[in-house]
Length: 111
Image (spheres, rainbow, N blue to C red):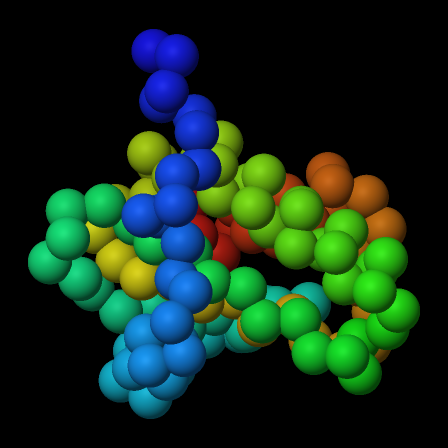
């Protein structure tokens, strides 16, 4: 039970070729603040990648949004069906101010 809610290194998408592959060949859908790219994988577990461009705002805002997304993924990865690579691109414009707002939006789309 101790390691169930960890976000391990293997559950992160880090290589640029992996990002490109998911963004080109994966399914794309959007919500108010995020664009999601989802592609099935054969690894048996989910992987997460986050894209936060500089046009979103200062580094503190980008880092806060990435923390919100990682926290949601860490706590809810067992509720997402299948094994897939997920990339979340943060949209420019109105962003959630609190974790609860981001969590509601992500639950509507992913769970």
